[in-house]
Length: 332
Image 1 (cartoon, rainbow, N blue to C red):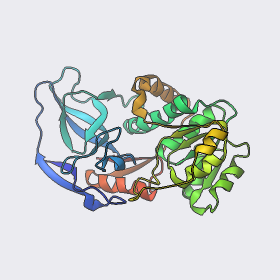
Image 2: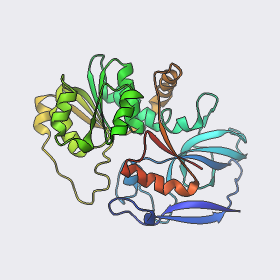
Image 3: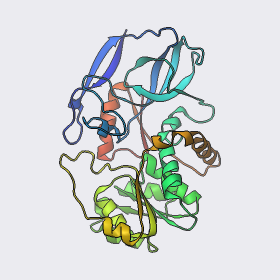
């Protein structure tokens, strides 16, 4: 039996395509003393992986040509030579796009399917849920009665961020890219209002109308022109959480926009870039709170599930075509 692997064949120019990936095979790995043999069960695909396909310095090393890609994965321990894990355990960690792989156990966390579905540990109880929670806690510092604006509101992070805003007693407005997604965030996630950016010709005015009292906190997942429009509508002492910039990830030239300095100065706005791994020490309490809200039916989540190991690259590409509702997960 051979083990399938997905490698980065070449660095994408613009939007990634299937030609940028290569399927290869290797002999089945065998765990050494102190190691585990893991079988991939669920794979998370996320927009930030596009940045790792560039050969440039960032907060995390770039993928290498001819080497496997990696992302958040739920795997089953099928063989163990490590006393900390036993056969049948399920673990969560940053793992390679392989059907089977060995690990010494470092960086792996056990997950319990009795507490929540395994897939939830890649979404609402995983890095995406933690990103929403910690971005709002550490930078947003939401107060009851404030207005929270969320872009990418139907996505994995945005949908959780909006719900947290509602839990904290805020007016929440979401920005998404289809009428189906607009209905979804209002009906399933209880957003107070929503804006379809694809059918809106004047985002500045649309945000002003949806947020009559201005914007206190903007959770930004897209960057670009929507960020420009949000900044114009920020209140005094507003906070902007720069979590993602998916509208810019596939651009091949340096983007320019309005000068933001006068707005930041005039309204004393805080705008801060945010990487969830900056707050690893807070993961435990944050995950506990998210789990409690789930138990209390205060937090819903949505997944787009794609089946098959061979489908991983296409599922990743589909993120940039807006085909996901909530968290995009591949079931192997």
